[in-house]
Structures are given as C-alpha cells and as structure tokens.
Picture 1 (tube, rainbow, N blue to C red):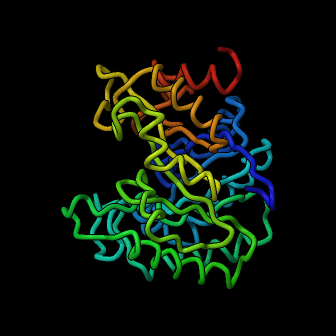
Picture 2 (picture 1 turned 90 degrees about the vertical axis):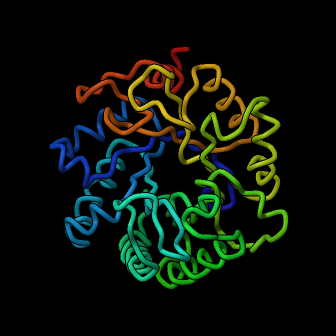
Length: 298
C-alpha cells in the first residue's frame, strides 16, 4: 500500500493525544515507549470531543508533535477521524463522537494541507466506525456510506492526491460485504475491518473470509483495530472477550492474506488495554501476548 507495492504494516493504536494531555502523559516518552514494541506504524485516533475542547489549531499542533516523534523513532502514522455512528443522520454512539459532515470536511482539509508532502503520514482513516446500529441510530446503507466517502475523497484530493485513504465498512467497520453488490472503484484506497473475536463465531477464518477477507483479492485491507480481553478482566465486554487462541488465529489469518494490522490500544484505561498501568508494563493477556509477537519473543 505504498506506491504500487502491497506492504503489510504491523502497527499499534495509540490513545488520542487530547486524552493523554488530560491524563498528563502526552509527550515524546509515550511515543518512545510504544516504539520499543517495534511497530512500523502507529494510529492516532482524533476524537471530536478533544478537537473541540482544545480548538483545531492547538489540537493539530499537538498531533503534529506526535507525527514528528513517531517519525523520529522510525514509525509511519495513520491519522484516524475517530467517530462511531451514523454520519447520514448525525447520530452517534456517545457524545465524544458528535460531529457533522461540515466539521469532518474541515478537519480533512486541514490535515490534507498539512501532510500532503509528508510521507511519514501513510494513511488517512476517514471514518473510524460507521454503523447503522441495527436501526438504533437510524439507517445507513453501503451505497450511502460510499457516497459519504466519495465526498471526503474528492475534498481531500484537492490538497493531497497521493495519500492512501482507509475506508471502513458497516457494523463498526467489520462488514465489507457491500462491495459484492456495489464497488465504487475508488482509487488509492484500502479497506478497513475491525475483526474483534466476538464479531463472528468460530470457525473464524471462514467467517472472516465472508466479511472482509475476500476484499484482498482486489484491494489492500488494513485491520486498524482488533484485540482481546479475558472475561474476568476490567473492561471485558462484547465483542472483545477471548484469549490467545484468537490472537494466534487472527495473526495467522492476517499473514496468510497480507492484511496490515494494529491492535487496540496502547493504554491502561481504554479497553482492551495493551498496558497494565502508566509505567508502560504490558497488560495481562493481550498486552503480554502482542508484545511477545511484535518483538519476536514467542
């Protein structure tokens, strides 16, 4: 997914810089610590809540520091507009995701202007988790979602023609089956799935093929979120409850399909966590597991 080449990225999802500012943990040390896990890319989630709180200029200044630190430590960056819900009806899962199409366009114009000539920013993830919520947040079809993507892509390409855009499916960015019926044939894009363990029952590979794996026959795919949490752990909830059996299965699947990936999340308070606490010790379960896998200690 760089130029004409298909590259499998091994990344890690970070905490929103605005959230880390609130916690008093935003700084180069946070980025240095994640680099010790040896990812080649990190994902910066940008929540409207924090963008609004800090103001766009200040927020983008802090985000720019993060991109620069990641570059210093040899990592590419994904900039992720981290919204969950239904853009068509502007109905959102929680208040921290509240936005509008106008704000979303304005955000991406600012980002595209800033990073058009910065190869260290490899991807723009346009819409973290679209969902129709089975009607609870209104309706959003695949055709309507791709129409939204078309508007955002047309806007971004005015300022940045080169960046690869990441496009998530429905059902919290799990389901890409709409491509079977309607392929918008966007250029310079990759598709996104978030295959948490309880999104489908076992046998996982067969179900993953049906929901997103088939897309790799034509387009690159990036699993920008996935991960697991033991049932007894704090923060355990559907759809993330599982164990290392899932970890082995999903990493094997990604490698077989040449799917890039970034587990959620390099945090001790967002779940499922990769960290035990603010001293950057890996968490029980997925933290210890992914640290071993990323640093080839398995």
